[in-house]
Length: 209
Image (cartoon, rainbow, N blue to C red; front, side, top):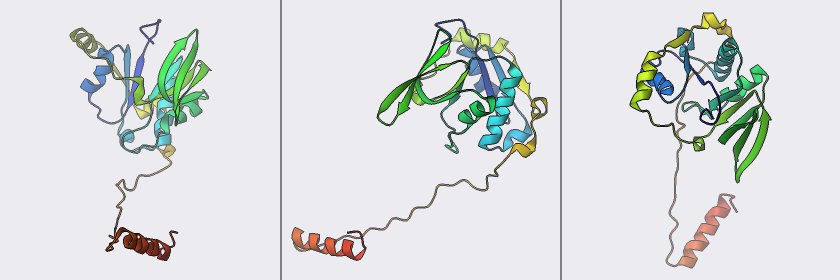
């Protein structure tokens, strides 16, 4: 989008003790500004708290046209934060985009569906969550790395955003992969017909047929 028309990109990231080197990569590939939301309060948060905190930061930033978010987090897989930000800001949201274009002050999105994609048009401002089909991050060159080192990182705390810890609505007790017990039984017979007959009886006894 920035290559096709005048645009200013601000990267917003939230979390405790994130690596500045990793965050600066976004500056090295073309972003203009990096804002980090860093506070001990952000060490444990739920989808609503994350969405409300990011929305507060976006409001503090001021005017915006297009907000791009990831599709879902790699840990909880909830996929709620992007739509939550849009709801709090009172703007439209389009999810799982495979292509995003801005034309004449409107956004055109190819949104993934089960059997392909649909095209959705929306006025700005709008929030779009992107799927992996949008593409890979562009390569970092030496010039980009040098320029990124010269740019500062703006850091905002929970107090600066006016965040209340009571906004947390859930508490994570435990995260784990569910244990699945799978048992199997081999049905045999002297002939295929006998094995099939025994299988049919077993399925009938199990009320599966």
